[in-house]
Image (cartoon, rainbow, N blue to C red; front, top):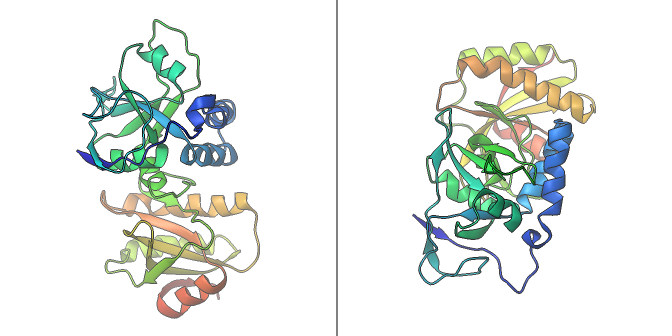
Length: 282
């Protein structure tokens, strides 16, 4: 496959040179206390990281290690099924972790977001971070990044509560978005479930359904916009999104997804003016 390899220069210090300490620390935090807060710190660290990826062979014209190139380079990821038949590929926070897994494999360094974009063009289902050979002891924390998480991270989006058919987005401040009416809105059954769930949360004033795309990613998503009647905590917001996502999960088809967004300020005004309201508290 071809990939625009915007990797890293040897003259510029990068996170792999200090062992990706911020990412490793975030992985340790999740291992000891898996919570929305520690997950967010992990995703933030991932997006700012550079990872070492084993490859079957170094592309022509490159030598092992970290590189910067402006040319199109063919990259072939190594992917294998695990014991459950899930197709995985591996990446490492630093060279010691990589050599603890395989002392001899060639590797290339990737910005994590670029790696996720590359993986989304394959049938790889999960990324294993810092796997290790069972005959050696583990020297770095490890874990798995699932495909739905990688899809969001590949767009620079921090996953919130992510599930098979539901995700909560946190877009960057001042990011330009395009909104409109969805060509294929949720079914009547899904709308009824959303209305019933919204009615159970007194802080929800309105629900709108719309289509949204960002200037950066290009592709669009069907979004349920949530307008609140009062300020609530982040934990309460996460509870609302989780409950609403779970309520419609059984009704969504295998190729369907819904995103949830809390509407504020000018964006709320535009959505209210242009898009369909599906719930309003009387």
